[in-house]
Length: 313
Image 1 (cartoon, one colour):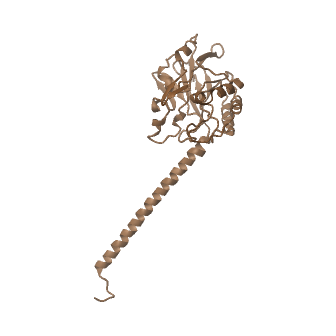
Image 2 (image 1 turned 90 degrees about the horizontal axis):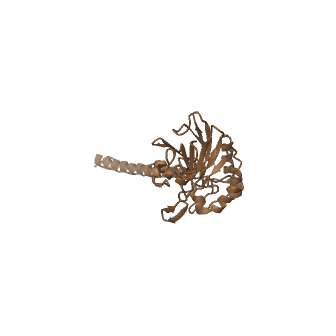
Image 3 (image 1 turned 30 degrees about the vertical axis):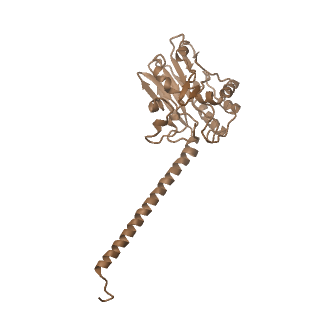
């Protein structure tokens, strides 16, 4: 055979080897590149969840007239839930921004739904001293006052400190008690429930200090009722005598990873009362996504919010 003449079979074999090598290289680059993109995306998402979204403050608005609220009796409410002052996200300057934004709403009534201080698993929290966050909340003014209830973390981690801080700035705590507010012809009852998870008895076992029947027994007129409850799990037992129940605690899920997050909502009802305006049998519940973070200092898909409610529209 002429040495300058190549066997076509050999040429085909060489081309097949080269093409196979290029194919393996292309697949390898695709896989490596894909893993890199996924890793970069995960890192970017984690960075956003830990450093960006928790620093936001949005205002979420609801306008409604529940069946037990008189039509045309307008009332505006600012809801501050789960402040969790401290940690890497709810620093004192962030608390100040929250209060500034809330004060601009100029509502008739301001309510705080508990969990005032930060607490995390295995994460170092930068504390905000009790007198400092309390003094910021005290800057909020409303014609019908500012009122508070306590949350589970207040009971679990610093009950005396939270009580003292709120008392020091004259923000009253409603604990299984109700007050009649408003001028004649515009009156309503504001009722506050004791926490439903106050005492930890063991893994997944709690004893609350809530007394819904005793609280509602204090209501002596037929004026409408607003109920404040830190955890929304009380809602199935709330009678239709209550026009609207306001709750927090869930943080709206806090980390809303698709298909996974409902399992981690801190409620025995999973995602049923995780967030937003819920209507069941003509009874109304609004669950705030809250402001701070708990367990881990991150939020994803549910930015910190101040809730603004207009009743009687």
